[in-house]
Length: 604
Ligand code: F6R
Image (cartoon, rainbow, N blue to C red; front, side, top):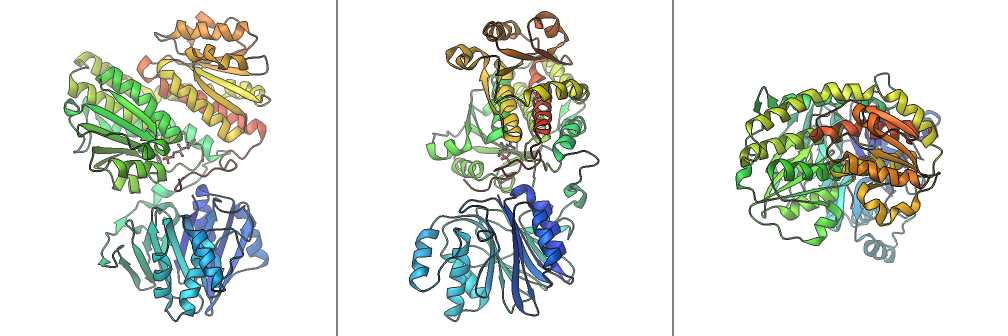
């Protein structure tokens, strides 16, 4: 949520700041702005909406200077207006911020009584005003920033820039990620490696509570207690942070198409011939009594799917919860519990808080796409999903790679617990190996799905149905569709339909039924018949056998390759993604950056 960047450079900073913001735009795109120090003078430019508006502004009104900070905003306090856009400035200090300052109202009132009036509705401006008040009281810029930070409650990644200080940026992190980039005679600060990758491959991740004083000579880092600390410098793979559409119209289309390749990569990473290849630290599941899985959004649906696997394959009791509920419920978590946290970004605030709640209570495993993320670093063991950078706000390849890793974990759990015999284990390994090829075949349904989507784009409401292990995919299909096409969609367990939602059925409400010909197929088909009997228009997504058995009366049929039952959720995620994608394209929405959303949700 919000991306920040800071540069103490040797060249004009504005183009590099804007380029970094482009790479951070996935974190928010309500407004953007930069500030620089030029000939000692602090100045800024801000624009509402996509980054392109800031770029246009800079063409007409350039901002010279070799040091600067920048911000791309996902609005929390105050509408997306120029006044509310970052950097916020109070006299000689400019601030960019990712997070939420919870005590900003008290601080604002206090500052107002001393004559420091805010002009925006934001929590962030309070930080700039605080720093200004400390400068006025005679503190140095570094002291003023420190003093301001010490008054803040809530979550923040911050960068301060000062008038008259072309060789200084002060940064701090608490609850939101921040990394230092090391150049040659240049230094950088950014929300993540993606922002910093074109500038440097040498990165130091700040720890919770750290503050950093950045000059062109280097970084001085202190921990929350004010002690000087050495944080390790890591090399990142710059190509891993490459973000290009590679000829696709949207990042989402590219990321959907990449799935055969990234699935092959992740399966190879954990399955070496017949042997599972997990890093040391994964518990012996024979000793685990219970699993708790926590995540948000699409990652939560990956957990829901894994619950079916772990229960069926390993006979392990599994509880799944959304992180925003789990963290405040204070559920009992016993010593023989394995707590699993799933997150693409590894920075989702609620998931991180839930993880911290479980620390010292249970073994903590995370399944993440960003191996250096906060969630990965705070886990006992992190399993990377190897999906590569995911730029489209709607998660696609990360979801199927999360599922692949969780299926492999279930395989290990089944072997450890003796609930999976050698033949079944071999069959599951073979099924996993066949998955990239099947996903590739599923992508061939793209044209048929595009045609259906054209009609779906006219609907106001759409329902998704699934039974058993396909239920989470119905939920995921509905989430994907609503977030990028803005069509109201709900996913239901097929058997639940007659307990209320069936009242919604009429010819204007298409119903998408996810039903491979598995052991529950006939049950799902009965529910589908109930829909058709009430005039509902059914899009049946099934395999050839299912199509032969149950196409009659269906409005449309989308055919998938047949797949071993257990892995059907991974395969059927593909039509769910394609339906959402093509419907959104038909409606002309902003597929990669849908309204009101951001890729990385670092506020609760
Ligand atoms: C939906 C989507 C979100 C994320 C959720 C969790 O397409 O992308 O629902 O899944 O915000 O994000 P991560 O996985 O980064 O914790």
